[in-house]
Image 1 (spheres, rainbow, N blue to C red):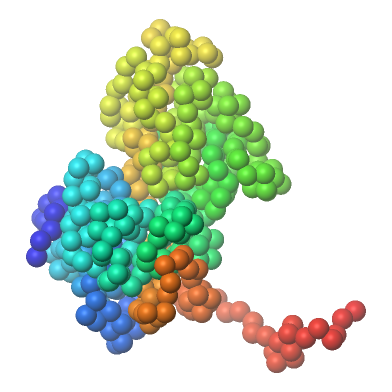
Image 2: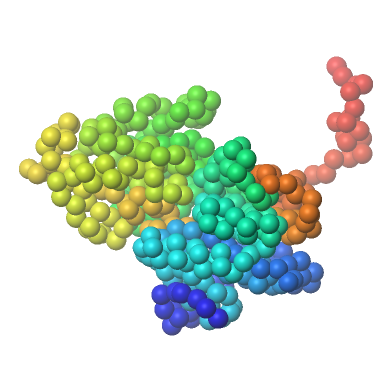
Length: 430
């Protein structure tokens, strides 16, 4: 079995972590038991380009249990948990191509290894796998039944491809599922982003001016969690409705050029490019901490920061680089003779998976159950799906939510026949 990981001898620790996560993923466990009985992926090849974490390992295990011949590669150079990768190879006999900290060349070598398995179904975190197939192996699109995309960034890219007529395979927007974005994006990202920041910096959040760039589901989660820890949260937005919502939720809202002058900690969660740019670095305070929790490392203009810096100190702490800007770049005073310091976390890559462990297993339980069931839905609808972006079917949403509630010991009411009739009628009114 071909694979490329850091060290196979890390497998014992990885297996313990995979099993620990499994304890908190009861919905996915039931999906796996269903797949073991029904074998929906028998005879099919799958290639997954995902964050290689202990939660992801449980998803990959579930897909293999359903009969899939599956291979996994990393969707981000810094998000791989090397011990988990080792366990997947050693204990689950699943080919993995992922090493934490791999360079760009290795990242794409691993991506190509997953593509060379000639998959019938793909899974993506950021659409790198599918976009590469379209660019480099377009003939392969004919054999791919469909692909699951689990990030906001990836769905945006794939909808853009569909709009341009460039998309050649069906896509299921797992990210847009209610049981994903309402919970994974909000509660998972909110908690894990702060976890990554605190692990990297040992920063006290209380009393800090925390700037949250973007008020989508991920931004909402981060802003709520930061406020819960005592931060003075400022939201920046380009969408008037989201900005209004942030204001109504009690947050200060202002343009980034104003927030940059007063922020102590900045976090981007937008999916767009250069959200924090040269003009913002120029007016930041000495000691400002800057990080990103979007999928790609484009939200912070790291190139501009590097050009502005007179000196860069790598690794002043794990996942912390210090950029020293000279006096010409410092418009708000300096705490050091050489100029102000700006601290960049995780090289501008997603801080929650680079400096921490990503989302808790209990929230990924819903996302990965939805992901697995979406793959089954694609197989069941073979030959019926067009090259477009599909939403998660409501029956999958309801099934996952129902199982999750039951696993939490929570019951809900059911409509009576009389109530159903009333809701479906128009005759009765005031």
